[in-house]
Length: 153
Image (cartoon, rainbow, N blue to C red; front, top):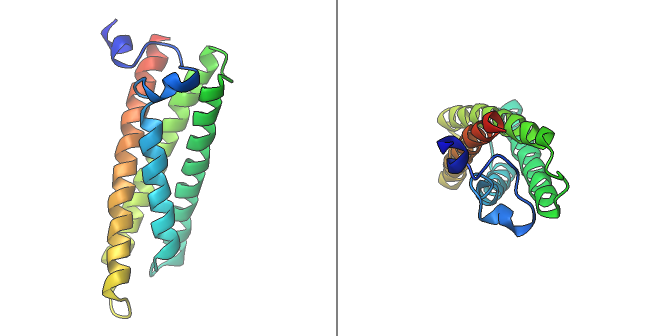
């Protein structure tokens, strides 16, 4: 009983109650920090293009998927079906793992930056790493509470 109460119940919210129920409130922060990671990676120089490609894929994929889920929840597309609770938990687990891998790789790329990069470019990459780890934290918290909601449904 306590886990369901802590996670906002065992059903998904509809309408603007998405913005006041936990863990769905975290959509806002995932949207903001995911967008910041996307912007910073797009504008920064990374010494290894493959790393930048993966981090860009993760940030764009999660940004679009999070935005889509948030809009569908606001519109009430889920209709109260439990399969959407499973989808929510699975998506946030995958997004948390993707963001964790992207954060670690971006940190590695930033550490590997040597000569030929300006102080500004180095700081852009540091900012991207910090925001990627913050986004990872939000996705992990959302995943944990989505799993609790899924377990109690």
